[in-house]
Length: 547
Image 1 (tube, rainbow, N blue to C red):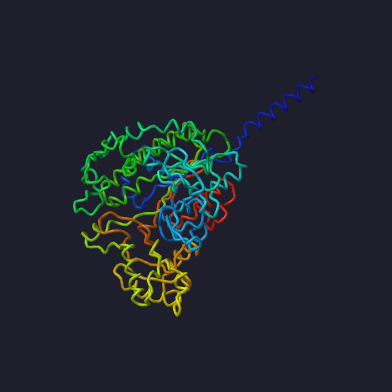
Image 2: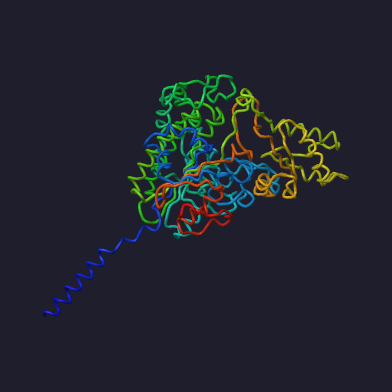
């Protein structure tokens, strides 16, 4: 009896010792991964507005408590929205994933194609044609697809953006849903590729009163005007007027659009608010992050792109937009803390591209810049070819800074080959204002061109969806009309240097100055989540996050 008691006491002591040294196994994956793409966010906004980030704001929270990759670059051309979202989530470049622009000429179909168009599906959520979209043109899997595969489709992946391409190309082929905004109806919609009827939580969100209530706020500056010392009003009339004849000056009176025009909201910070609120509704409605199997929510904030195009990066409108977005993100992160639990979710924030300064602004300050009208340039080139060879319509036009040959016509024309046309096109283009160089895509690596640009062009070339001649514009020159505003698309750093911030689950504070590429994001996510990389991935894991 005594021996039995001694044995029991010893067992209890042993269990006590084991208990003192036992540490519960750490969660092997976050409950929720949130990918945030801020459309048209230059990297230097993080430092330019650093002193204005709110104490509890999202940017401040990520910069102080997360990891910042300060030298993240886009490694292909053109630096457009569709290419950016596809590259972030596939871990590869247009030469592999096939998204060579927002639009392109398809050499096989012999027609212009929009990146997410799909006539085989139907709009779900409105009576318009804005829902005829799907990821059918994306040629590889995304990190969201791989997350679904890794967990045998037991988890959920959702994409959200005002722009259809922002949500569709991020989540990929097997998403539970991608939602985008129909500016004609004021509704969040999707396509029959994903479902035949909107979920009840989306129907509940889709009330005109939501958009109207935001319109009624107008657009006032968040802070006193004199505190916006890092930006300025458009005093020289070089910016676009996104609200018609309304002068570009605060406050913007937009309440008149309530019940009338639901598209204007995209060109205001209220578009970000609408996106955030819809994202919250998705978390609640789909119970994202509610269990141990990781879900993925891909959010793209499209409004900064609309605002940036109209007003340019030096505008007071852009500064106010980012100060507001900072606060929105801070509140959203607090929301995620409550829903998924502190430490149970992870977020990364990046951008699909940057933007050039408005050429009119640059010229006014004695710096090189200008506009190139692609349509006019293409018409002039076509006429020059006609004069040279006596044949009309030898090119189809200029798209994505590429000359598209009319290949079938050239083949039918006796005593005329593609080489003859290419030689003339290159010689003619290099004499035009604003154009630095022009090259055949074939043999680009042997061209007298810095590796920086040569690699971008190689990474861009998917033959079925590209032209024959690549054009490099001079620094500061942009595609567009000389009526104001700015754009992006070049290989210069103002378009290609983007932010990349990581925060949350297993992310320790720090920063890296090493050159990192946009195609490194998806492989790094795969390593963090212990899953396979996307099928076309060529990027490298950002090892600094693991040290």
